[in-house]
Image (cartoon, rainbow, N blue to C red; front, side, top):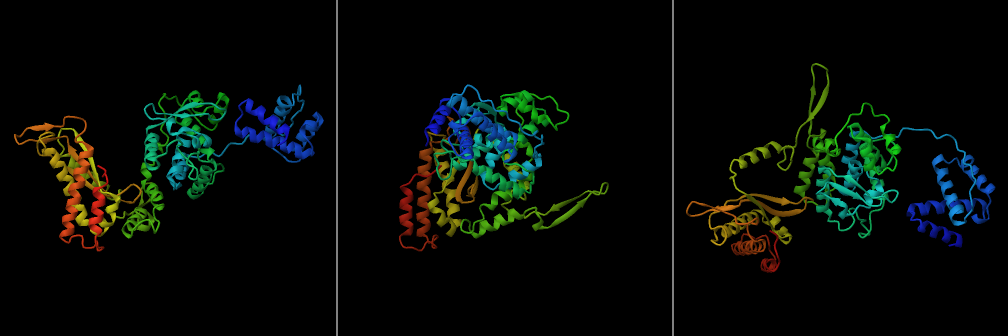
Length: 511
C-alpha cells in the first residue's frame, strides 16, 4: 500500500465515510493513476481536465458515474493533498429522464408466490411492506423489531442515518413465524456459512432475480424495485408525501416527489399505516402459495410415500391436473375456468367446509368458563414405533393424556372433581416432519361430587413439570404392558423395548 493510499484511507475514516464510499473513491483514484501511469500527486489541473474528457468522450460514462469520479478526485486533492481548489469543469451530455419500470400489485404478488425460500420471501415482504433498501434488510437485528409499538428500527441506513418505519400486523405475524422457524439470535437474517455475520446483499438480489424469472415478470430492475413499488403503491392509496419521506429515509422531499409522477388523482389519508402485504390478496391465492411452499419438501429422501402422495394431491388441487369446467357469462361472454379439488382429507381447501362445521359443533359444547390449551408431545425417539404400530401408540397417547388430566383434576388439592377434554391428534409438524402430539382443549375447572363447579385457582391449570412426569410414567407403563401382551410385535430386536423405555424414563418430556 502506497503512502498516498494510506493517507487517503485515514482521511476517509476521519470523516466517517461508509465502506462502500471507501471502495468507490479508491477505485476512482486507481483508475486515474492507471490512465496516466504515474502517481496522482504529480498531476496538474490540465491533466485532470483531460481525464474527465476521456471519461465522457471515450468511455461514454453517464452523468452520475462522472460525478462520482469528480467527487472522488475533489476529495483527494482538496482534503488529502490540500490543494486550494480543483478547477475542473465537468461537461456531460444531457441525461435522459426515463421512467423506471414500476411493478404492479399483481406482479409483486406473483414474485412473492414464486419465491420458494421462506427467509428470502420474508426479506422481499419487508422490502415491499416497509420500503427498505436491500442493505437495510440484510443488516436488521432481532432487537430492531418493536412488536408492541408496531415499529421497526433501521439502524445506520443510507447516509448513516437511523429511522423508524411502521410494521403492520401482517408483517409482525410473518416475522414471528420466521423467528419460530429459524430462531435467529443477533441478525434477523444471518449468513448460512457464518451465522455471526449478516447475510450478504448478493443472496437476496439473486433470489429476487430467480423469483422474478419464475413468475414471468419481464420488467427491468432488481430487488430495489420493491422499494419503488412500496412508494408508488402507498401514494396510490392516499399516503401523504411528507410521511412517506420519513419512512423512506429521504433527506430532501424532492427525492420523494419523484414517485408522484404517473399517479393520478391522489386522495388524502389518515396516519394509520397502509397494510400493503395483507392487501395483496395472498389469502385469495392460497393454492399458489401452498404449491410453492410444498415444492421444497418433495425430496425423495425426506418424506415417506404417504406424505409424498398427500403433497402431490395438494399441489394438483384446483389446477388443470384435476380437470374442471369453463364458466361463461351469458351477458358479456366472459369465461373463467373452474378446476376440481383433490378431496384429500389433509387438504385445507377441500376440507374447509367440513372443518368449519366441525368447529361449529364443538362450539355448541363449550362451557362459559376459561379454557386452557394443553399439548402432550411424544418424544421423537418413538417415531419409529409409531410407524410400526400407529393404532397402539395413538390409543395410548389419548388414554395417557386423559388419565393424566383426570388424575390431576380429581386431586382434592387441585380441582377436586371430574374434568372434561376435547383433543385433536397431530402427526406432522410445520416442516412436514413426523411430530406426534395431542392438542387438548381443557375447561378451567371440574365438576365436584356435590354438583358444584370448582374453578381453577390461578392462571396456570396444573404445574407443567409434574404434569409432564405423570404423563411420561403413564405412557411408558402402557407401552410395557402392550409389549408384554405382544401388541408391539413388529419391534423384533431382543431387548429393544426395555432399553428404549428405560431411556425414555430418564429424559424430560414436553407438555
